[in-house]
Image (cartoon, rainbow over all chains, first blue to last red; front, side, top):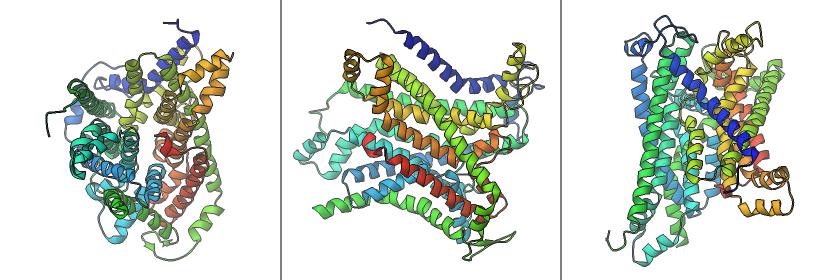
Length: 278
Length: 284
């Protein structure tokens, strides 16, 4: 191998600093969340304890954290499943170049780039004018989909752009129906990418703030609850919460990435399933 | 045959179309309608008046706030582009093993899947009056007094924007870089180009689509933001998004809607200009 040029070392340092910039703050608050009971919002550490984590579990020092966590979890799963199903269907539709595909594509892009507060405001207005009550599972759910679906669809585009059509043609030549082709050929091939779509669907919903703000109603999701805390909580308890929910996010990301990896490995090992029948 | 294809296509696209109609198109139409309504302190009244727009365009605050919005977008764009391009360049051209490449790339993208609110909060211990930055600088003897402009200032707002959104640059630029045919770079070197010349005349032009997609993301996210500016400036700075959210807090929905319509038009014009440089669907 040729020796590394000097630029490599300069850029490597730059990259390391970038990672420090990216992760430094969150590492800092996770250290500070172990402040002693008298500790403040910054260094020095005033003793080391798990006091602030216990504080989180005590009812009502600080709002309804666990209720909002459960709601965010439920909403995240709802959004995740919907995003996967709708994105896959739409991805297949776009391969057929149906009339109106162009408009729908631009609508999806618009959904991605539109300032989030417009969705929040607009959905809130519709609900109030129609006399409905906004609720995280109805208006909040729909508002979040306008954020997750574009990502889902873009991933499906990337997947189908690389999809080898000859697999489908082979299936059809063997007499497979449309549905059989999708069920036994297309879906298994794109399955690992669906994990990616699911990851986006869940995490973007779980962390969504702006589009949920006016559409969640009287029961907050976790990000709304956390934001509410920033205005009236001035103790490290908010760091403890930040640490826990970030760890939870990392765990979720880990599970998704791991399953994608396992799936890819298993496929590489098994290779063809020719002759095994369906 | 032809009809059947369209029909299946429509059926498969229907859920997406339906959701976007209900939660994107209808809300925008509603906002446009309400922007012509009148408001009292307690309620909003259907009408067709231009009061909200007249007020918006005659208020001196409007122009200041619009200027601030463009300022945030421009500075954030320049910084995220520089940092994002450098990071992507390092990953794409200096890391030789694909596994390490994927691993480091994931390391750059993981924060995207965590909470923005928490990521903003996590700057407080750094930037506060007695925070890490100030105490470090004082102990080094660089400054005598704590710097007041670190937190709750334009500085902290832009810092947070860069922190939150740089990966929107890294991902598309890295994506286009990975598709550059390496023999082009060899050819440039064989023809006597220096590293800088190769970078500027070969790599940058080929990365343009990725740069454009990243730009669209960053610019629209910053222009439409209200929460980062509110939180990181301690409510001391304003952009257009904050004007809207303040009106909403005061239940002045018609006025909020008028501002929202103007913001939407501004963002769409910016995107229309950017889209002239790139075909998004070809780049996926």
